[in-house]
Picture 1 (cartoon, rainbow, N blue to C red):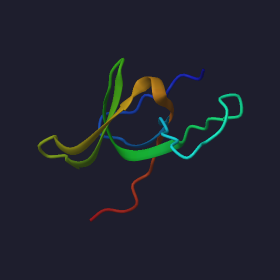
Picture 2 (cartoon, one colour; picture 1 turned 60 degrees about the horizontal axis):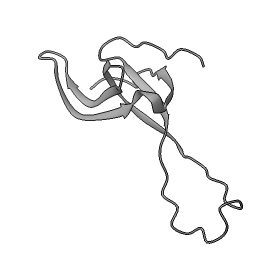
Picture 3 (tube, rainbow, N blue to C red; picture 1 turned 180 degrees about the horizontal axis):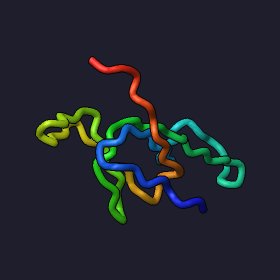
Picture 4 (spheres, rainbow, N blue to C red; picture 1 turned 90 degrees about the vertical axis):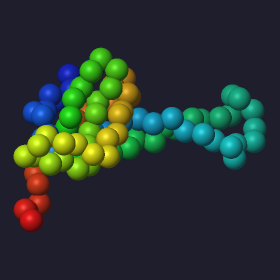
Length: 90
């Protein structure tokens, strides 16, 4: 497995990760079932990575270091982390 990219604090990144899926519509044999897991992409400002989680914020206030609207993604489910370029400034 390729090591994950290690972003700088507050760097804008995209995290690709595999999520669990609930399948309530399948009606057949266990042998006939083919599971599929969705690959998701979350984009945000990198906050931190621990052994268990990758944390992104959708909002930061750079002057104070305040972060808001956090998402914690299980590190074991992350397939890649990529840098993103900001699209202009306000």
